[in-house]
Image: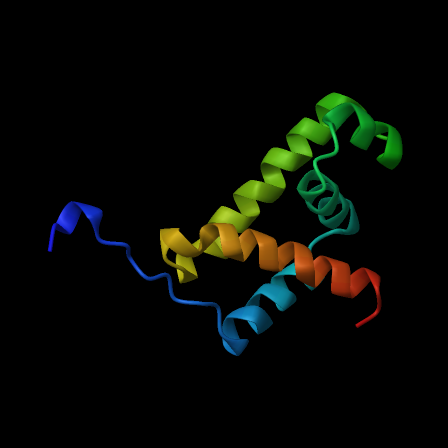
Length: 101
């Protein structure tokens, strides 16, 4: 088998992982949850600043801070191949919080 072409199987997130992500999402400040959720919906920083009633530079600063939080507090528990799913699951957990689940 040609090692360069092997596909590495990514470990799916389990119940414990999802619970950790849920706790992280619930502890975020509301503005950080909003920024993460809206950025995942591909809203521009301009539109997001209007929606949240804060300046575009503040949106950019807070966006960077919330992604740094994810990197520092969540990514250390996961493999790099799982990072995309971790961010997606964080957004799912934020949606659940908004819906009162």
